[in-house]
Length: 116
Image (cartoon, rainbow, N blue to C red; front, top):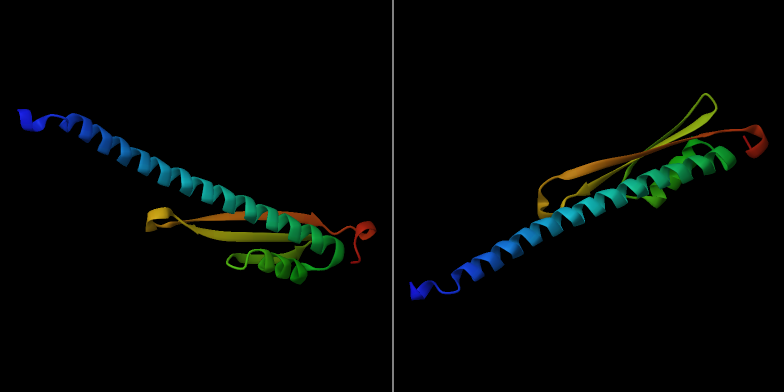
């Protein structure tokens, strides 16, 4: 029995450290996914707004690709509206898969505020 002294404290410390590490990995992964979602949405919005005022769908796609080079970008014009979608794949920490987030924005091409 005397050889087990302090074993409970050691086990509790190891268990607590393991739980803290897992929680930290989950929290960091959640923050990365949230940040990528914000980036995708903001990129789509900026590209659509710019194209609606100054260019066309090809301009929107070029802007979005410059802002998010690793993302998938689609842009097209539909009924006087520029539609931009940006998809970003975020690898999760620990190498256990990935999450894809999408940002989508539409901007109406109005004659009084655009060159089109």
